[in-house]
Image (cartoon, rainbow, N blue to C red; front, side, top):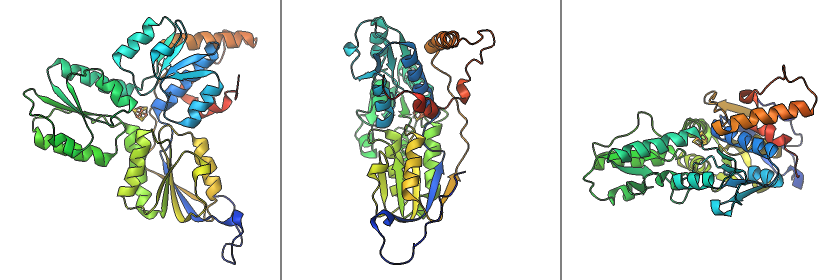
Length: 367
Ligand code: SF4
């Protein structure tokens, strides 16, 4: 739970001085919110790369879609690139959580440096479905956002068999396929977008194959369900996250669709307006750090405190990418030796218990 901030006095009398302009009664704080298991894994993996190699470490695409996280790593000497050809031969390289096209993965390996692919396993699952269905001769209707890195990477698995759609109208405009049809999706869609396009596809192609569980990931689903519980009780909903974060945009859309009169997507506390009143809902997309949530709640200073509204407990955990595990062992051993600790009974890594937000906070601000 979150402790309520101290009650403010002078709430009812006279005009407020500037510093007292905010008149928020209550914050309803969604849980789960913020970092998902895939983002946790990717951030911790890049932090290991930074510890293991002299800068610069390269990262293909933003490790996750959050400016705060990206700039923390830039301060540590990580260089983010949108093309693997920008990486000097032999330099250490991480591939982002969104998943990369097969030819990008190959180009990264051919570059000759240490490569860690931090793709979320749930994105890998979709890549696998695309590969298998295309191999069986299906035409794939893929629901995703044009130009989003996850969609670009997934479509590149079978570019000749895949058709990107975002709307029901685009489903109606698809050709009549002679082949069987499969329906797959970007992991971070809004439920309403997904449901509409799913129904349109199934009515247009009644034999459509779908995976047993939809491709929308647990984190997307849980964050949306948590927000769905409170959005219609809020005068304003604040969704913390970047404009290029698909699951963040899905949260924003959900709050609007649920009838919340004012929905604000903000990168950080400096974008929160000072005129908020009444009940304010707060949530954060899967790539937004908890420190942003804390700063915003402190700024809102709700007189009646914070109520955390929990939809479910999320205990998913993704271990570090396989290619990183040996490196982690080596770095851990070197660190122990450097510190003069006993090698035989060094505590070892408890990666599951290590929080990416703590890892981020512990990174020095510059190198
Ligand atoms: Fe993986 Fe879902 Fe997180 Fe994306 S939002 S990184 S698919 S768990």
